[in-house]
Image 1 (cartoon, rainbow, N blue to C red):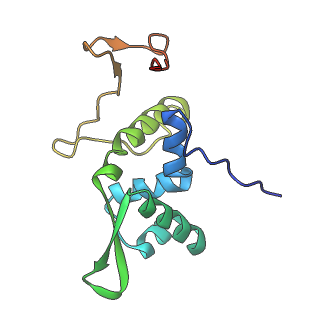
Image 2 (image 1 turned 90 degrees about the vertical axis):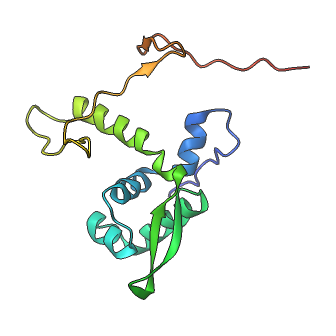
Length: 152
């Protein structure tokens, strides 16, 4: 029996609240497909092979969270276009970070047949790197999560 998901909408953690908004891995794959230019329900369904009822629920959640907007399809009175909002387009950094991590840790040498490249020149993107406020590059042991002081 599946349990109900815990609501992370009030969590004091940027990761937890982000996951609350995005939902699950299907949602990130839908966003990925939007970055590839897909805009119609039928295009997402065909590309992902996702059951229509699940796709419908995920798209509805992404619209509620302000990641997509729905507009009438000028080519069909029976369909809508799902367009990334500015908030949705900002997920590009998350997708590139996941892609680059996956490239490094989830594929054997020569196994991956795709790359994320610069639209202007077709060159691979630089590896994303964390930077301090002064521009210094930071490694995983050079930052921490810290609570803000409470006034009172």
